Image (cartoon, rainbow, N blue to C red):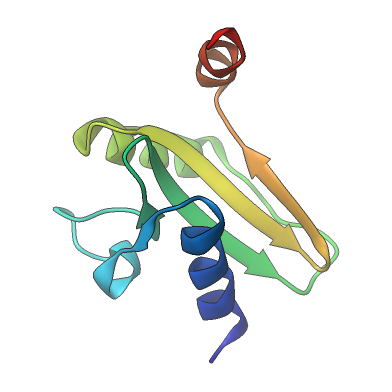
Length: 96
């Protein structure tokens, strides 16, 4: 299993979701995994950095809205695992 596949599988498990067939490569079934609340885009790199663009964030946002979920990016940079959320979604989450 490739490292990115391990990351997607781990994220689906860790967030109580399921993997998306084809890793979200179909317009009608976006995201790498999802649960009832979140559309999860998983990224993994062995480099010391990961480049995150406004276009990439807008795409996951639009995909999440299309699937009636909130967008989440789970990024593993070497051995550091982080989650990226939109500020508004994070604010809603901490108010719950």
